[in-house]
Length: 291
Ligand SMILES: [Zn+2]
Image (cartoon, rainbow, N blue to C red; front, top):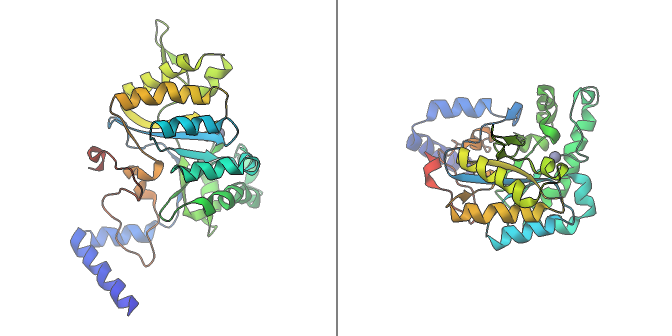
């Protein structure tokens, strides 16, 4: 009975979308979720949509970042480091409770290089430690994302992790559009910033914010890389986000980005992939990017 209903629903969906052949082929091909290369393309550029991602936390400084996000009613994604979360489990719970998306950034922020090839169990443990902590806090429908520490990735890692029945549910590694480095124009203007390097240069939060804002405006949207663990982190967010609110930007969690839907595993029994996204959650994305 259940099966018949599922089959009927599937058939109806296929007819409705007119994608019967391609969907079936895609469904069969798309079991692996970790990609051989970092996912660089978010599709947010030129669309006036920004997805803030905060890496390496949580720690005591994360509370101030959460306060600023709450005051501006902005939801973001936090790439959690396991050893930080073990020490700050209350903050981990607060991130989830305030509607942000938890994501996986490894247990110890290890450089995932070739030394893991001979020890796949160590690679798996790097991700399982975080998964064990964030998974119980996630809501039904939340999706799982991974970002590699330092952006370092090897295609061999994808094969190892996709063979694991739990970790294969992740999409990644997720890269970024904005916040990768400090650049200046020929006449010395800050054209882009990377927060860790701002603090290394002892810049103020407002100086660092100029680079973020200029890069965001120049690209007109994108996935933004920041960190939530420095004493200046909250001031930086407070200098960037209200300006973007004023300029009419839409803010998205990673699971609201249509471009990433192509990496999802089809549900079982295999049903057609929805042609358009908009995940569960209170926020509505700018329809312009759903084309
Ligand atoms: Zn990191």
